[in-house]
Length: 360
Ligand SMILES: [Zn+2]
Ligand SMILES: [Zn+2]
Image (cartoon, rainbow, N blue to C red; front, top):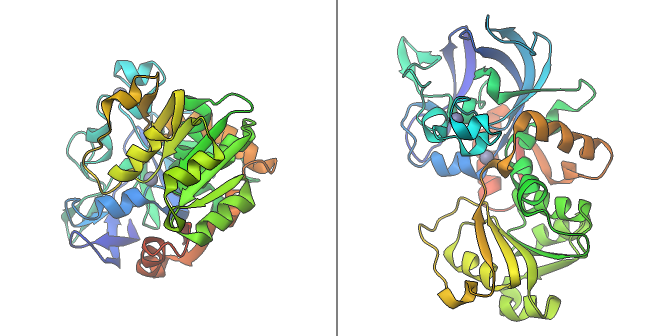
């Protein structure tokens, strides 16, 4: 079928809206008509080196139009969120940890299905896709059933997309992995969509102190409005001193969403004894370094992919929290028409918006 997709023609962008072809879903895949799709930092990162021409996008929501012959539990007409995919066969997938699938990169980041094919083409030539199980910067997606989560038709499809990555990543780091105790102190570095989702989750778990650190005053205002007890603008002084004033003996939990070496080091060093640092961001730095004695007092560092979630279990829970008013992410979202994808990317890069969602 003919679809409209935002094609990345050359690494680094921009995206151009084009008519391209999408093959029918395979036996284990579903065809989804995309309602809306969030733009995530991972899209922007991969746009710098992904093999082109390609269609990215991995925070899609929509309505199922067709299902492959082996698909069970998903039917045409179902409303769905989409998330990352996984192989389903390795010990980590079978153990309920698909975010750490042994074939995660092979099934999510090569631009092709595991057999080397792609559902996308243009003038008979292959177009890379299948990005994080989706490539949802497009009017339609062929996704593996494993990456698709049916949701209630009551839920606004315009909000759901980022639950599959950004919101799920931040909230999952707190709710699935770090699990701070009631009354504990948490500091979140980076008050973008992932960071604020972590902040909201920390409030849900009853943390007494939830500090947000950023250089963008507007983002800190939003974080405080939504539940951060403290906003620390690291441009206003030495962030170490500002954090020590909030938690004199160090934080119980720190979360880095920036992927920046200096911030990662600060995140580790802001912890108290036995404190735990969750690393969730994909950022500009290749390395992190810290004074090795700084982890002797029981501190630990954990990398977390996709909120360590089993999407079919975690997303509905998070959507329930949202429906009950306990995960109010709507304020983070700025909507753009699909045709304004490049403007949305620019607004995201400048920090002007927290989460850009394209509406199709
Ligand atoms: Zn696997
Ligand atoms: Zn993402």
